[in-house]
Image: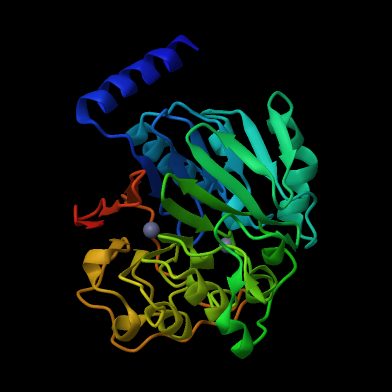
Length: 362
Ligand SMILES: [Zn+2]
Ligand SMILES: [Zn+2]
């Protein structure tokens, strides 16, 4: 407790000195999984997801989250959202919980896609993790209380908000051309949140699929417009309809893709044709983009361990799911985040921690 108070005082002193009263968002590289950390000016923290499962991956990904926490000057997680019960989202949780205090665990409720990894975790590990903390099953419309921020659950357990957020609710012109997509059982259950900080707006919808995007965004756009669109379901084509991406009119999108996961051509076309988009930032060079569809390297945070001189121009077709595919290039070495620092006036700066490249959106 004392450490935390000293930490907060130190952070406040630093903040006062620098005049920085920003909401900081760390989009952390967890190899095509998700881990996104929000830190308020008062140093309250919200983490969305914990990276991958596995002996090597969970330690690697929890370690990368702890690094971001250290950079942000936070020593505990005040609120943790596990968007859904896939291993690339909850996989690093037990490891992370062994290294730091998590005060509140938020999820959508039971797993609906039977699988050994998630079912065992929920039966034997998860209850012990939240036993001494708060456990919340999120419902659309719920608020997550964080002083200085307005954090609203907009989707959970397959349900979406029925009433528009303040200022939203206009007819969505993209609904007319909507085409349904594929989904598994758990992605559509994702907990999705909308965050407002002064005039700044951002949204993270977990791995919510196109069919749920349609329910959330049609016939009226209940989210409104955002400054930053976070996640994009790793840049995969089962999500990212124009109904969602174009209607939310993001200035910046930040994709949590992997070395061979997401960033495929149809998603890149949708994102790059989104009205008002200024830049797409990516956690990884993805073989599924090739140079043809990739953004310039300065907007990409991470290479692979055995980096080749150049990425092929043509995008690689996604290998069929299942154990037959060759393994994706690994990245277990030093990882870099993409950091957003947002101000109350709605302006924000995005920084690539690999190369230091930074851009301010006024
Ligand atoms: Zn990586
Ligand atoms: Zn995922």
